[in-house]
Length: 317
Image 1 (cartoon, rainbow, N blue to C red):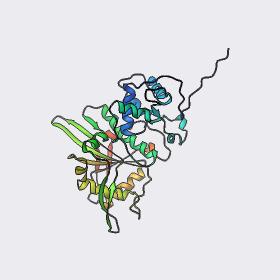
Image 2: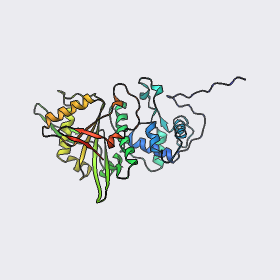
Image 3: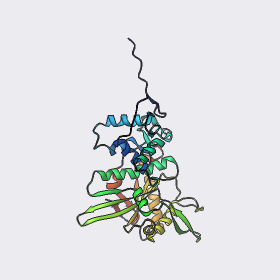
Image 4: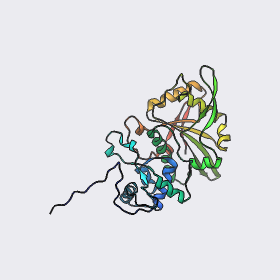
């Protein structure tokens, strides 16, 4: 007797078997996190549901169904696998990265959780994925603690009825002064639960894959120096308080992909701000370097130390 070989479905293109798929609570949770943060590797999505679903194998199978099966109440497959993730070394051995589709956005809209204030980071897809992994890693790290809670970007922007961009005034090395919009990659907050009452801090995220020069003659091009000067105006002058209707402190989290870029950033800060800069924090995440593979959540972004120029390292929790 000859047994037909098992046909594996493609990792890149959906292949429906005709199975009926209706969104369940876990699926909607995944959709919400993708809406809030942006594209995420499967390890992140599995971490979000680990306490409510004990079988990781079944959860992975469900992700596969949400990608492949188009027989749904919302007229299509619920998850996509962005093609950019397959343009890397040995991509077939990597975990998969997922994102929303029109059908999953329709499902969220029906549930009343649709929002346009989630991750809106611009630039190349890999940069956006890095930003998503940064903010999702920090949220996931808070879920295992009872002393701190995560405040998502959508809640901050909806409360202030604004968008994540604001005009800042900077003076370039030549002495010319002009106004330029500051557009951080993301924002989030932490609510610290203390015996004497809750305290808050908010964080702007800058993800740097070593693609930005330290300085540039053309200030219309983004550079480490231009970023530093814009944040100096935005944070030190208290513009963020007016923009976002906040009274709590604001810090800037710079996530770089190698130590050399971090050292370059600290040296630039020391040159521009000799007295030290306590609100500019730097940490390295090597997984988003030149040879990239979808990472697991990096809990150290919350619990680990962040380097600063002219000041001691700081933990944000």
